[in-house]
Length: 301
Ligand code: DGL
Image (cartoon, rainbow, N blue to C red; front, top):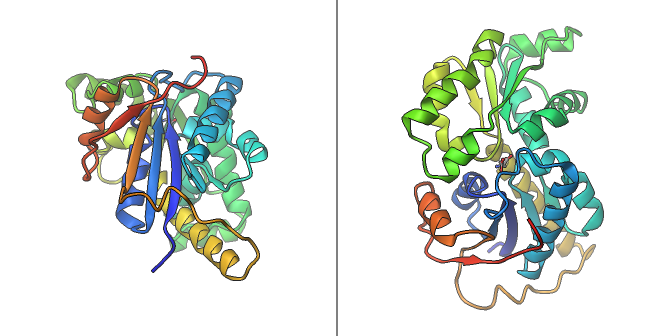
C-alpha cells in the first residue's frame, strides 16, 4: 500500500473544489485539507502584494494542519504569488498555470488557444508565458499535422485571445452557476473567443468548471475546453511518486505525520467566511458530501 499523504489546498472560495474533486477521484491514497478564503473572495482583482500575504498566511495554516504538499488551487494566486511562496516555504508546491498551459499545448489542434480568467491572471500574462515556456521545454501538440508544422519552425501555436470574466466568481460563490444571468454574461464574455476562432479554451480560474456545460453550449462542440485540474492531478501523482522514491532511497527522511494516526478522515474543510454557504455550494459539486466546515480567521482582509 502506498504511503498516505496530506495535501493542503487553497483557493479564494469554492473554486478549488473543482481541482479537489479530480484529485479525490483519481488519487485514492491522499487526504486533503482544504482552505477557502471566503471572507476575502474574490481574489481576481487583488494586488500581487495582497495575494502573497494571503498565500503566506494560508500556507502556514495548512502546514500546521499536517500538509506535506501544497496545491495552489487558484489561478490568480498561482499567476502572481506562487514564485514567492516557493521561496518562502520549504514544501513542494504545485500551481495551476504551468500544468494548464502544457495541457493546452498538447490538446490544441489548430494552435489557437484562448483563455478566460480573472483580471489579475489575465493582466499577469502568466498563461501566455506558460504556453511559450511549455513549447520551449518540449511539450508538443498531439495533433500530428500541427506538431509537424511546429517542428518545421512555423509559429503556429500561441495564446490568441484572453478575456477576464469578473462577474463569474461572485455568481458561482452565490450558487448561481446555472442561472439565466450566468448564461447571458457568458455569451458576452465568450464573444471575443469566437471572433478569434480559438479551438482550445483554457478555464484559467478554478471556479469556471462550475459553469462548464453553459460555456460548452455557447462555444459549440468544436471548441475543446481545457481544465488545468486534469494536468494538476498528473503532476501531483508524479510528485508523490518521486517523494516516495526519495524516501525509499534515504535521500530525505520524513517523520510520520501525526495527524494521519487519528481517525479516518478523507477531507477536511476550513473557510474564513460563512461555513454554511460554502457547504451548500460545495455539495452541489462534490460526490463526497461536505458535512463539517470549520471557520478560521487569518490576518486582515
Ligand atoms: N478561483 C480563483 C482562480 O482560479 C480565484 C477567483 C477569484 O476569487 O476571483 O483564479
